[in-house]
Length: 344
Image 1 (tube, rainbow, N blue to C red):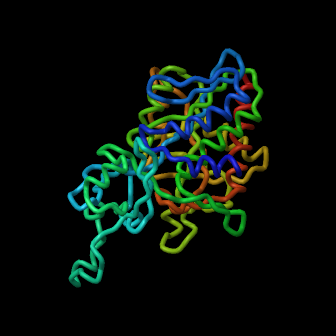
Image 2: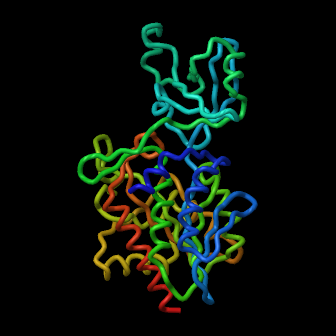
């Protein structure tokens, strides 16, 4: 899990994935025949040769914040990059990434002691929060190198929990990136296998659109994380996916507005899991979607599917996943690609 720790603790919001890309490039160059970066910033690695192409996809970016305004007293107002539940922001420690280096800060708001009773009952919105970096006024903030447009991430470290679980920030989708690297290490097939670490997924699936257009694969498998329902407050009918239940194979997401998994890809993934005796879960999603949505609509169409690592508390700084599930995702996708390549 050393690589996952490095990836989780690396900082990279949409459009600023440089540090993550550098880590992944170093890993993929050890096993792939060609590694390059396209004009938008996607990292593309190719391994093997053959008549057909398979594309593995995992997005590099994490949700984050950006400096919007610095007030006279030195407090920073921010905007969000990606989907947030505002309650996860309050009272977090953050890093402002400036041209002079990293600046630590904390997210604050009006204290409950000074709120009226009706105010206390309401959820504090992001627009009413601010970042305190310890400066006395706007000039001090600027001397630290902070400017409008600087990106902001959570100050959180990777850690191991009991039961072979791990926690950290940016598991969405550094777990997928980690799995993709491990799959590429294992694969040796009669086909061109592309590992693509995409940019700007959290703000519109942007990197996947351009990368898929360039590669135009015969098969695409997206590696991502998905929500679970195995903790208090979630009914089983809302989400039956759980930790240690194995990879989640998407059948539909976003109520069909995103991806409806291609029948052949669905069969490939399920039959591989069953024949290899890999525990798996089937997912019908109503909420978000993944890079597969834009990949499968490339040019004349690309058969695509999604294999996810079940993860608790997604889009927060304390995401939790199972080491066993991560390893099973690697095994399932590697075996599925091998079977697909053998069939020609």
